Image (cartoon, rainbow, N blue to C red):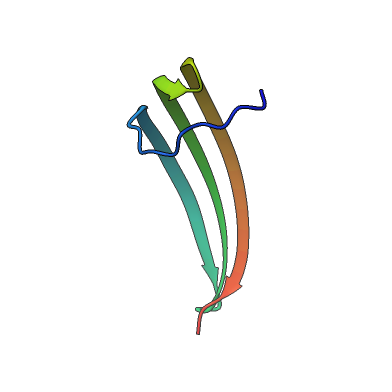
Length: 70
């Protein structure tokens, strides 16, 4: 809202996540990999300009990779 926060370290909560992947290799060098990641973050009582804030964050990611091993 146009007001600067005072820069300082705050411990506001935690993050937790899980990941799973499937990797298939062809011809001993070429691979394809599919993975899923999910993260949840919970932050409470964060000090901001003239008050406090709370925040919940979630993230879900799907990744497909194709590569060559040297």
